[in-house]
Length: 111
Image (tube, rainbow, N blue to C red; front, top):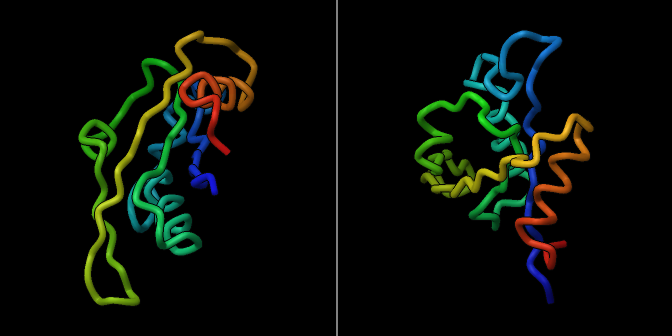
């Protein structure tokens, strides 16, 4: 059975918004971390999350390190999630499809 690979389409060039969408500040941290927490709650066995962001996007320490530490409420401990950044290197202006194409080129066998 194939392993499910999670892909978070975290944002493009943010030309209309003026700031990186994935770094929007929320009460519990940047938007992408909020979404990672939700994904982990839905799929607690997941240890790696792939994040698609536009090539040359602004990153923070967590994205640069490629690791995020999450509290595991069920076990009262913490879990480390690996972050794999997939950048749309082709720099296409086709919206979310660019992230999907970049992920496909990264791993064509993934489901």
